[in-house]
Each structure stands twice: as structure tokens, then as C-alpha cells.
Amino acid sequence: MALNELLQLAIEKKLFSIGLKNLQKDAKNLSQKYKQRSLKLSDEEKLAYIAMRLPATLAVMQEVFFQLNSFYQTTRIKKLLDLGSGPGTSIWAAFSNFLSLEKLTLVEQDPFFLSLSKDLSIEHPDKNKVTWTSKDLRKISDFNEFDLILLSYVMNELSHEEIKHLIEKWVKSTSELLVIIEPGTKFGFENIRAIRSQLIKNNMKIVAPCPHEEKCPMQENDWCHFYKRLERSKIHRYLKEADLGFEDEKFSYLIASKHKEKEYLARILRRPIIHKGHVQLTLCTKDGLKNEIISQKDKTHYKLAKSLGWGDVYV
Image (cartoon, rainbow, N blue to C red; front, side):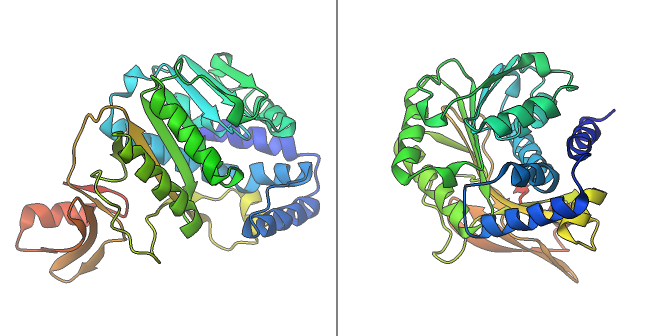
């Protein structure tokens, strides 16, 4: 059985005793709190989270790890530290992307999420490689043991000074990789941009999505984000009262390293516009944002441009 199917069964098993009407009410409360950036969730809302949000955040994490695999020799990733691990999303993304992974340490101070994480992963084939730690992520002092540090959807729980301190801790450590995932909102991207600036000032390398370490070219009222399309389960559609069988989850992310392994020239920042006879691309390059027109006459690049999408690298 595929891991995603195994997780979906675990989610449905966990929610079996809850009436759908009650779960839908909790899902609506959860959505409202997200809009208000409220961090205080009831246990019922956390259960709604695993039905409504976990599949989307997992799809995003899978995509970000895929990007990392494209630009970095991930066979060196043996130990991963997930700070603020929530319901254990990284269990389902990390082992399927990093085949060399020997140890995954989850740090989560919320006892309900920690318990959910253990319950959902009870049938996961690599669960014996997982260590759960009940602790405030800000109190983890040593990153040196780990090859990769993951911070996924947690920056809104920290102050600007706490974020800076956390990043500084990674910079000074021997840990090679840092992965940060945030919602694809203006607020989420501002966190990403501030962290990016701090990393570059400390001579760290940006693996993705940026093809350079120059000043971020995004204008004040714009933000760099991408999307991942995922299929909605029946319960997901019910909770969201959605007609479509899929949704597009928007996200911003940053992958940083102590050493850059692969260079590329540009990344596509918007959905390509295909016209008759040419393709229009919005690209992030070391020289800033560029609107590139790829003519049908340029057969090689035209064919490539038509095959690419928003978020892909354009060499």
C-alpha cells in the first residue's frame, strides 16, 4: 500500500468516532482561526487539522524535498531534526525522499499533536527510526548532530528575534542543510525573505528556490510563492464544502546550505502564458525579474518552455 493511502486510512481511523457534522464545525473554526492567525487550537480543531490541512502540508513538503533532491546529494542526509513537527507530517515526506535517512527527530511541545503523530504513524514502515521529543523548539541548543534542520509552518509562532536567534544557531552549527516552509502569503514570504537576507549576510548558500544570492527582486506588494495541486479525499471535500476534487496549496519556501552543489540560471515565478507562436515566462534571475518571450522559431527552448510550469527551473 502506498504511504499516502496508509496515512489517509490512519486519519480516517482516528476520526471514525467523530460525527461529520461536528468535525465540519471544528474545521470551520480552524479556518477562521487561521485567518486571524490565532495559535490556540482546541483538541477538536487539531483533529480537524489532520483531515483538512495535513494532506496539503504533506504535499507541499514532498515538493520541497523533491526540489532539494534535484540540487543536492541527499544520500548524505542521515539525521533530520524537525522543529515544531505538529502531527508528524515529516515522517511521511522524509523517508520517501531521503532513502539514506537513519534517524528522524521530531520536536513538538503540544502533547495532543505529539500523541496524534505517534498514532498516525503506527503502521509506517520506518517508525522505528523516529524519535519524539516533547520540548519547546526554542530550547533545542545543539544542531550539530543533524544533517538537515526542518522548520515547517512554525515561524508564525515565533517573534522576529526568536527567528533570528534560531537561524544564527544553525549558521554556527555543523548542520549542512536548512529547510523552511511557510504559507504562500505575503506574511509567510516576509518571514522567508528576512531569513534569506540573514543567511546571505552570513555567507550561506541558497539552494532553492532562488538561483542566486543577490538582493531579492520581489517588489514591496508582491511575494514569491508556488503551489502544489493535490487530490481531495471525500472527507476533505465534505469539510471544505468543495465541489472540486482537487485544491491548489500555495506555499513559500527556502533551502539553504553551507556549500552549494549545483548552479542554475533562473526559476519560473508565475504560471507560463502560452500564446500562439510563443511562450511568455516570468523568471527570477541574478539580474532581477525578467519577462522572457520564447519564440516557436527557437525550437529547442520553445519545446522546453512549453513543458515547464510555475516553480520549475529554467536553464
